Image 1 (cartoon, helix red, strand yellow):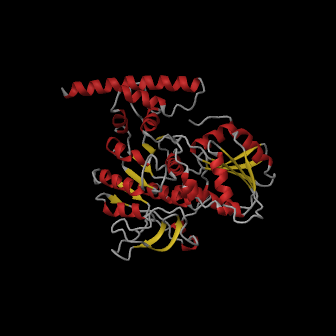
Image 2 (cartoon, helix red, strand yellow):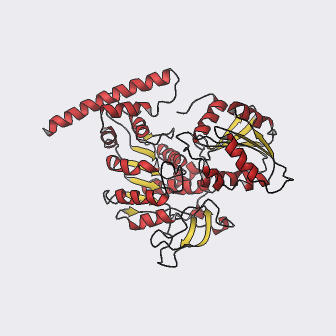
Image 3 (cartoon, one colour):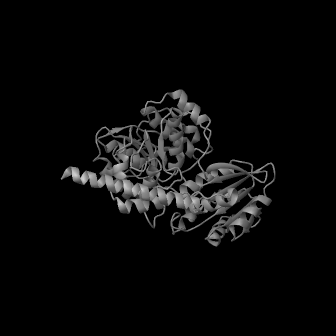
Length: 445
């Protein structure tokens, strides 16, 4: 009976793969997108165990990368490091991080019989579906980057997510390696509670402390006893060096000394991505020379501090999809001398339909410096209102331009950008895809 079930599973797998590859060909031939979701959706209907059957064939194991911010950059960096060592990688490079997107990424490397031929699968996973996919994936390494408030209309608070993560991760085999962010109190606590082997990554660079805890902060209370944490300093949001005066809980010790690792990407938030990828690569046996050389020559993923040249002018796209991420991209902008910025706010399903989060963003810092701010997107007037409320003085030098049409907004922003400066574009997720299509003429998804 068991052999018969196994044969039926293999038969359905082969049929599911052949259908998925046909769908991929049609979608790409008609230039309807990258076919990063639909093939997986259709194939899963034919073979519900598809994710499990494919992941079991990955030779050296699945590496799962989860968190609110930084998944795509961390995944691409780790993928690049391993590819330089000659490994074949399956990777959901378009950022399609729900179940259908994971399946589609694995299907790309599968033959018509359903045989998958890769050394590693590096899968960035939406934080809300981590508990659902952990059991079928049985990952070798789990990277837990951070937990911030993101799309509360869909996900809820960070404590709810972390409890679900802990419950499911603790059931995985003891040889599973978990790599959480030591500077995130919730994830530091998660790592300290797990029975598996745990490595931590984090910063130890007090010179980069913020002057004060920002408004968009989520977890400044002890995850064990609920008492207020004492911070020596914070690097961004609630990530920092902390202890609990009530129960003694404190930050875990990172595996790597952060000050010894350089980075090429802009923004302190990318230092976390660099350290996460480096910690995982060392655990996989990659030599430090290769890791450091890859880091120093790395190019950002699409929309994540991605630099383009459009009509002879430099453009930098900084994905800004929640309060913490947007505060960090604003920090990058305000540390530059460039005076033109385009902000695009959408409220579609990938962005989250609740845009009230913009009131938790420290837009005052962007407005105070003056210059030209062009705003666009589905919720352009909500964004414009937030920026107007950020003006502290009636003598403000801000030039605020409201443009509903995105294509025109981009053209206007480029016109206001001097040849020797960079136009910074801060879009939400769906807006980032639209911006890139306008600028490059190519769809991502």
